[in-house]
Amino acid sequence: MVRNLFFTRNNFFLVLFSMFFLSCGVKQQQSIVGDNPWKTMQHIIDSVKVPSFRNKTYVITDFGAQAGGVFDNTQAFKKAIQICTENGGGKVLVPSGKYLTGPIHLENNVNLHLEEGAEILFSTNTADYPIVHTSWEGTELMNYSPLIYAYKKNNVAVTGKGILNGQANNEKWLWWCGSKRYGWKEGMPSQGDPANRVRLVAMAEEGVPVSERVFGEGHYLRPNFIEFFECTNMLLKEVKIINAPFWVIHPMKSTNVTVDGVTVQSHGPNNDGCDPEYSKNVIIKNCTFNTGDDCIAIKSGRDADGRRVAIPSENIIVQNCKMIDGHGGVVMGSEISAGVKNVFVENCVMDSPNLDRAIRLKSNSKRGGLIENVYVRNLDIGQVKESVLIIDMFYNVYGSQSGNFIPRVQNVFLENIKVKDGGKYGILAKGYKEAPIKNVVFKNVKIEKVGKAYSIENVEGLQLIDTYVNGTLVVSPK
Image 1: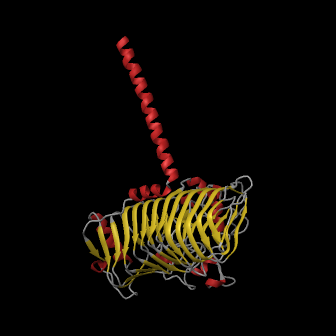
Image 2: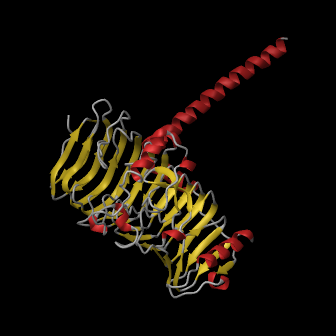
Image 3: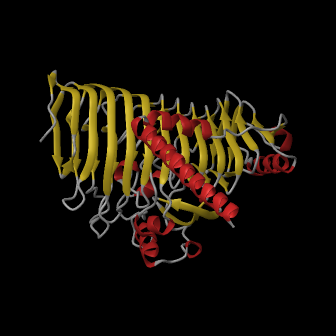
C-alpha cells in the first residue's frame, strides 16, 4: 500500500510538472505568434502542399481537339481529363493554338497545362453550361457551371503560359449586370430582377436548402470563371486570364490553394481578381491584377448563408503582387458573415489612377462577421483615389443593408508603407459605438499628396508610429 501510494504521489507530481511545462510552452508559443506574426506566416507557407503529378502527358489533339477557335472541343477536353485521372493522373496538354470549348471540369491528379501560344476560348452559349452546385456573391445555389470547375477534388492544377479567355463582352454575359455601361438597355432583363438575385438572397434568409435554389437559364446570374469548390491542394500558375463573366478566381471551401504568377486582366462588372471564400491556407503570390472590381477580395459568405456555413476564411497570404486598376488592392468583404482572420500582405506594388484604395475592409450590420489579425508590410503605393486604408462597417450596396449583426474589426497593422499620391485620406475608418474598431497601427508609413491624415469614428487604439503625412510627423489621436 505504501509503495503504491509513493508511486501515485510521484506520478501526481510528474503530471503537475508536465502540465506546468506544457503550459509554459503554450504560453511561449502564443507569445511568439503574437510578437512575430511573420513567423506565423512562414509556418503557414511551409504547411501548404503544392500538387505534384505523374510524368505522363495527354495531348488534347489526340482526343479529337482541333485548333482554330471554331470547332467545339468540349468532348475532347472531357475525354483527355477522364483518361488522365483514371490512369493515375498527369498532364493534360493544350498545344499552341486557339481552342473553343464549353466548361472544363477538372478531376483528381490532373494538371491542365497550356503551352505558350495556347488559348482556350470559352463558349458564351448558356446552353453549354450545366447547372452545378456553386456560389454567387456569397450565397450558395444551383447555377451555371463555372468556366473551369473542380468539385470536391484533390491535387489539381491549371498551369502554363497560355491564355484563358472567357470571351465576355457587352453583348455576351456582361450586360446581365443591369448597367448601361456594359450594354444593358431599358426593358432588358438583368440579375437585379426580383426573381433573380433578390430571390436568391431571400431563399438563403428563409433557410431553403441549396439543392432547391435552382437558377440558371432565365435568371441572369453570371458564372464564376475558375472555381475550386471543397478542394484540397490546388495550384493555378502562370496563366493569363481575360474577359471574365464574373468573379475570376474563386477558391470556395478549399484548403491549400496556391495562385502563383497569374495575370488577371478583366474589366467587366464584378470582375474581382481572386476571391478566397470559406477557405484556409491560400497563397497568392507573384500575380498581376488589373480588374473591374477588387483585385483580391477575401470573403466568407453573405448574411444568413454565411452564418449557416460558419467557416471563416483564414491564413490568407498575398506576396509580391502588382495591383493596377480595381476598387481595392487587398480587400476583406463585403460577403464576410463567417469572418476572416490571419491575413498577411507583403512586398506588393499598387498604382493606378483607377485604383480606389490599397487596403479595404468592408461589412455592415446585415453581414456582421469578425475581421481580425491583418498584417501588411512593405507596400509601394503610387496612386490611389480615396484612401490607403479604409475600414467601412456601413458598406451599402443594393439598397438598405441594416440588420442586427454588428461587424467587428480588430488588430490591423500596416508597416513600412510608402505612398506617392494618397488620395483623400490616409485612414478612413468608421465603426459602431457598441462595437468600435480596435487596435489599428501604422508604423513607418509615409504618405504624400493626401488630403487628410485620417478620418475616424468609433475607433479605439489607433497608433501612428513614425508616420508622416505630407512630410509632417502625425501624432496618434488621444
